[in-house]
Length: 97
Image (cartoon, rainbow, N blue to C red; front, side, top):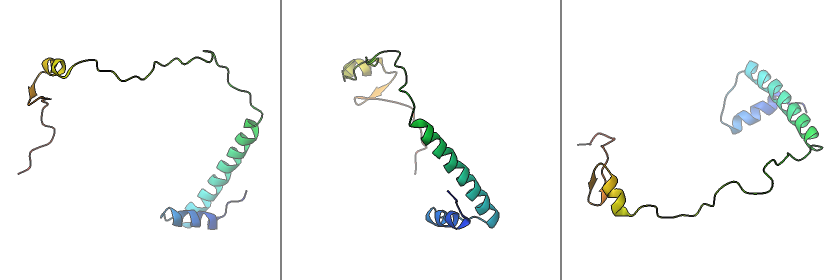
């Protein structure tokens, strides 16, 4: 597939970019190489074999079941500081006047 500088100009307009003539030529050449590589990969990918599944068909992840590990009171008791039922942390932003 031949990519022209005109093609690069169209894409640049869509992406709201500007390129000088040298950059357009360079981008057109690079895009041609990328497309050629992608076509090569696509052609070789059609005859590939499935990857080996060394763990079998079993799921190695634990179930993502929500659970309450600690009560609110236990968490507040373990916190270095709490205030009005919330864990108190140092101020991250300066107070605005």
